[in-house]
Length: 384
Image (cartoon, rainbow, N blue to C red; front, side, top):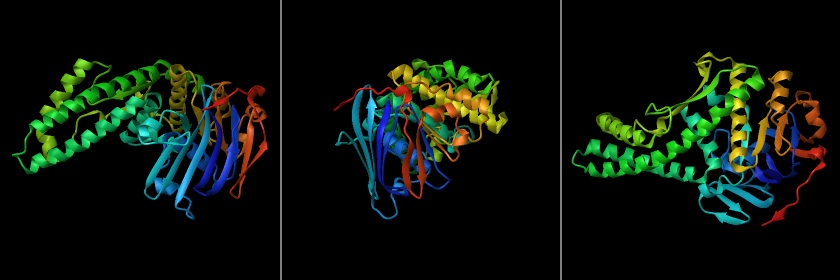
């Protein structure tokens, strides 16, 4: 998968910018505050329709405008498609080949990216919701149905919580309706758990080896801390345990007016030598764990889809020693497009610089200072 071009209109601090990207390594250089991170953010929005930063969609709009547009051409399996995300004060719209896609879930997973940026350290340090959201994005990029199931589950969860509050106020309300909701949520839970257990099994098959190769350390595992305390997928146990928990927790849920058991409460724990990395790992070890997790995402996507997603790296090398940088770079494959930002070109391995396309950002302008096409190869494309 390759992003050929990117056009921004009234996005963040950019009123208009047009960029063409090389198939292999692309390096964007700029001082802090010049807008290099905003370019990676725009690519992320183009893929997933929302920012990887905190904030609301309208924050993406340039202060001089009421509408932001992110457009790009993406080469996927030698087919070229155009993608566009429009954001205004009332919402957003998405397009593929200029045709509007009504459901966001049908847009996502067409153009896929994997990113690492400083805030991704929250995958270890932050709340369970951050880890769940990141996991949902990873699986959703692979399987469109997963996002559909999650949307349906979240809608039912909201209905269930509202009905619990109603039951608490009016004891005469019909509990049979709650049983109907439970059954629908149960059916969706079985499907969602299948995707989660399967994906994390794939992660654990490769992440320890990746982590050892980039950090020199071993003993990394990702544990799925789920509400049912299951170590592997078992449909019969999921159905039985979930119904039992909803039944035993009914009075407590009634009083709190919320569903306290279910996959919306699940978490991931990164274990290093059997210990929680959130508590016991150093800052440097945590960084390498997250990078290993992201590389595992790349490898799994390649295995399932046959192509790598676009890899976005925001100032990743500035706090990593030369040996570990080189270990990470070994995972940059010839058929992988990588887009890197940095404040200092000296933080980037010179072998990468030699074959990369270099961009310089200054005063809101982006200029190519050095072209680059990995190994001089270009693939033919056909436009739909």
